[in-house]
Amino acid sequence: MSHSTAPGEATADGAGPTGMAPAPHIAPAAPAGSPTADGTPPDAPPDDGRDNRRHRDRKAAAARARASAPPGGVTWRHRLRRDRALVLMTLPALLLVLVFAYVPLLGNVIAFKEFDPYIGESFSESFELSPWVGFEQFQRMWGDPYFWSAVENTLVIFVIQLLFFFPVPILLALLINSIISPRVRAWTQGVLYLPHFFSWVLVITVFQQIFGGAGIIAQTMREHGGGGFDLMTDPGFFKFLVTFQMIWKDAGWGIIVFLAALAAVNHELYEAAAMDGANRWRRMWHVTLPALRPVIAMLLVLRVGDALTVGFEQILLQRTAVGTGASEVLDTYVWNVGLENGDFGYAAAVGIVKGIFGLCLVLIANKTAHLLGEQGVYRK
Image (cartoon, rainbow, N blue to C red; front, side, top):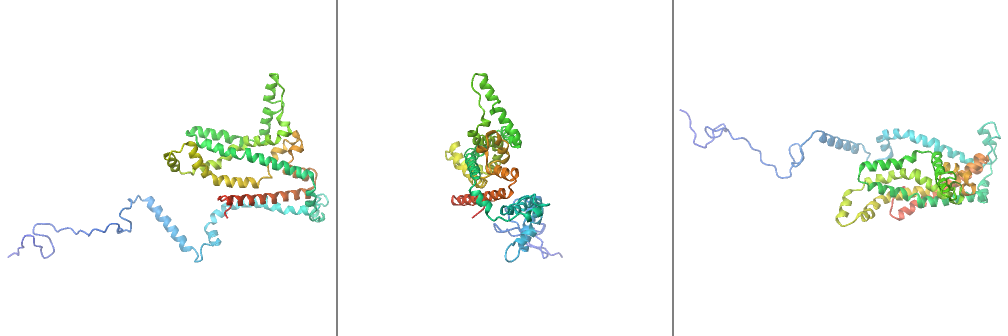
């Protein structure tokens, strides 16, 4: 006799009611916000494979870096081991700077000697036989009127270049940044960049053919009954002439840094300013220029530190046309005294004074930038 079950009564083996399949086991619902079995949050995006692997690799690398860090923090030795590949990549550049910038500084010792390269059979013998004179070269410098004339010309040219040349790359960067068409912007940048790759010989030749006594402008004026002019041999206009030559040659190249700074500006700031009713000029004044301010401060500090270097090759090629009284700067003065006259000790003394003065200008300009709230070349 078979055993029957009542309707809805479960059998002994746990099956469901007679004639029905066993009910599936349903796990209780996890509370909202709790992670799933693999540890990912329930609202995480679906796994696309590659992105998740990259994320896990980055987390594993960060965990390894934290585990390998010493208990006292990351030291310079730890950084050296960690970044040894980057250090090896920069070694050639550091070697070039060491050989061509720092090793020659050892030769400044001849500023304290009456150096004569022909007194011995070799340079080392000439150096040993040259007598020590102490600070005699520096004392001679303070009483040299030609030295102070070169300093005056250098500072005047620097001030003119600071007023007329330094703002031009900023204005050009703002102009190019306002061009909407990418094709027109690329063409404009190419035209402005091109003169930078010309040599100073070519640049001066172009100016000679335009503003010289036999140039296009002078010939046109003579053909129409006017008197010709020659700006290339005018001593009073020479300081402005070299500034305009530098603007034409290097202003386009100088906008690269400013365009890079403008590319990093968040466009949402422009949109927010436009929604607040700011016109184009207001957006440039309150959004664009504040974004350029750190870069302007840094380049201004570097330019002030380079105040006594106003273009050696450019001025040397034109000094005979206007005379040394109007064109002699510190670089050409060192060239004239050291290489042309053979007074190497005095030329080295002038170079040392120039370097110390430039270093002081950098420190003063950088301190001024800190007082104005900018970082400058280095932090406080």
